[in-house]
Image: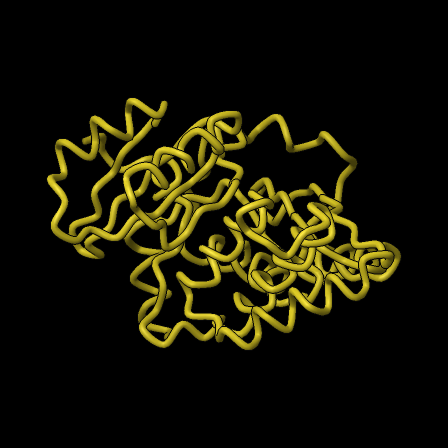
Length: 253
């Protein structure tokens, strides 16, 4: 298996309490809403994006009634527009930040994102200012049960996996695919009878930035403020989580 990927270096490990669970629920329920509206169907068999969103919901234990309510509401309000704007900028110390949002009010969202950048010492830039620093990839997280890891790796490579990384501590496999191979990998997992605990399109930095602890904390304050905004779906950056930064974050939890 490949070694730790760029993706693993810029993803913070979850704390035991996972204080952001409610935010994660909200993000996934919004994704379900957009998937239903976009696909004009509440049936996952006929709506690939909804199928992925439902798998993600199951992976973080979103209550079934919340999921059903989101689908029903989306079907009932199919004429109401939902937007998925993106914003680009820089955190303090030159760290690139890419923000993905889901909203029904573009003016509210851009005002909020701009205010967070300004308040936290960052700079909201124009479209394209940092996009070129990231590659869009599909990231799948698979639980490890009684599979033969080497045989599974070969199957995943057959579906165009670019990286396969076994996390022994978490007992899970991280799979990275090119953006255009996301559907191919999803079909392969369906054929193998495997269900990912998470399947997302993410933006992986081509290079990462390493900062001393104090400077890294100022970057993370901006990232966390963005993640707490109700319209923000995902925040990507190119700050590398060094062992020092990880240790400081774990101590603060």
